[in-house]
Length: 288
Image 1 (cartoon, rainbow, N blue to C red):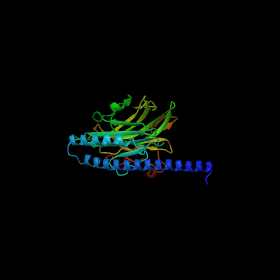
Image 2 (cartoon, rainbow, N blue to C red; image 1 turned 45 degrees about the vertical axis):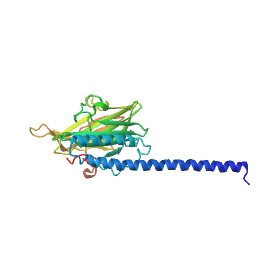
Image 3 (cartoon, rainbow, N blue to C red; image 1 turned 120 degrees about the vertical axis):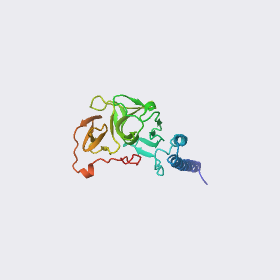
Image 4 (cartoon, one colour; image 1 turned 60 degrees about the horizontal axis):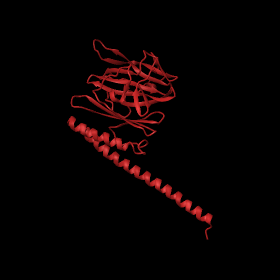
């Protein structure tokens, strides 16, 4: 015969097992739901890039944005790989507390439209929509989500500035058929509102660095974590052309006490191993 203590232990074990089973079922349901969402998104992206008119692209992209807004509120989404979404850029910040999703499409007139979600480990989710044609952002003005310039981001490095975590972003964007730009920008989050730009550069009170260059060339912009160094090609004008082109020498900004200090010349001990890569990791940047 079970003693009262035995009954108590038995009931507690049953309750404990029931809780574990319930949590497991919830996790399985969540995983199943997000897998179905991924299949739906894959189909929408495929149709978006096969669409033959701006009106159809707009409808499909609105559907993608709506579905993403739902999917990214799933508790499993922050860690979910979304491996089948080849047209979607997916990166984590180096502290793994921010995830950035980016994509774009080309309009009938050749303009690029950019879209992005910033998902924080704190479950905050912020959508960015490009409300105007792509433009080269002013290096001395703050930018909000409402006047975002549009870009694909491929790296995010945290800094602790004034007891606030900010992220240095590296991105690529398209200005015209003949010109692209790469950017070093700073992301801040306060009260569920994001802003771009911060006075962390030691050059001319800049809030960001925007580097336009000829689309006929590739411009390197990468982060060397070992040296806390943001590295990019020198740019110069060629002949009478008004577009800048990169050469084979490099400059950089070194992170020193949460400030970016300009370095005119950056050298490499082993050039082939250390030379920064020129392409966005997830393949959404054109080859040039």
